[in-house]
Image (cartoon, rainbow, N blue to C red; front, side, top):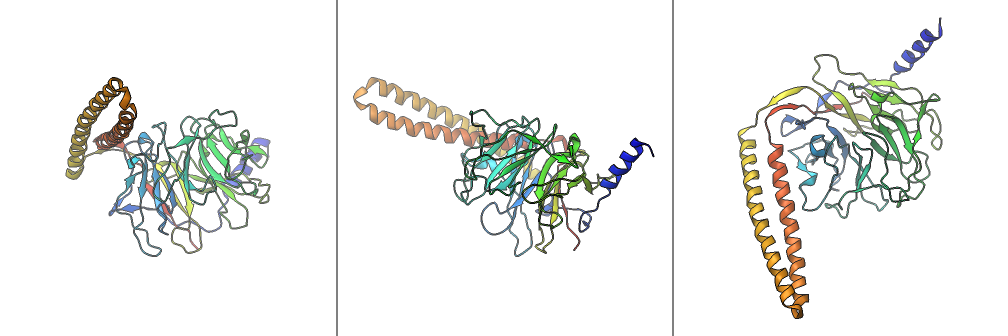
Length: 394
């Protein structure tokens, strides 16, 4: 047997690895009786976690269209999941500044700053990492980019997707990064409360850098085979999911070559490509399941009567708020003129101006929200972005 054939045999053997516990056939996750579909530009990116602190796991779904984040709140009882529509994370008056507004948004709900509540973290198209810190149960601070010690933005490679986890068991969160360049580790040189990134390290599988560009999408770190060591699962751009098993120790992980956990969808399947994944015990049976978002399949979108009405209402509200903003701005200029003309009353007029600035900002945010809503309700050719559940067989 020559070397190339031997190498191919080894690769095929690695890819034939079957994870502990088979997965059942996928079923689409539903909301209000319909399969969840982000539509527009597709690229559904799910994450399961208790978003609102009510003890039930909600569903977060990022999408490519303006990097929006959908929140599907769980209204089910017990282990049942029930979703009745969604709210956009950007719907808050000042909450959740996701920037820049383009490209897929792959969220993780995690206590990144060690203050006891969950934040949202995600990579972006340009290789930056965005942290949206929770300020209280329902509110978040504006998003900010993670930086290095010199103040420059952390840059991790094009289309970087990140997963925060204590990779080396030193009690702080590191970053596992999947980008078009490969699979990487960014260690935390700081503390749980203060992230200080080290230089990016290439992760290896059986001693070789993980460089298959298609396999590094949306890494997730979890002990998939319940052996006490965290593994890495990665979605592939062809729609498959690969499993890098950890054969090292909790403090010094070592990865084996990837095995195919979920094959790419066959031609004619409803499930699309570009797998983005989340691992969770969906039905609380003690076995880890897998939630997968996809992108694929174009269709011609036809708005329902309700959507058409909603688009008209949102466009009308945007115009009304624009008129109101103009009125408030004129009022601000008049107050500023009074402040200049009556310096003895400067403190009074300055207080009035601060109030007007706050009112202007609120009106502007409401107008932008109405504009986004109106623009999101468009018809014509779009791309599916659905969410699938793979339950695990005991």
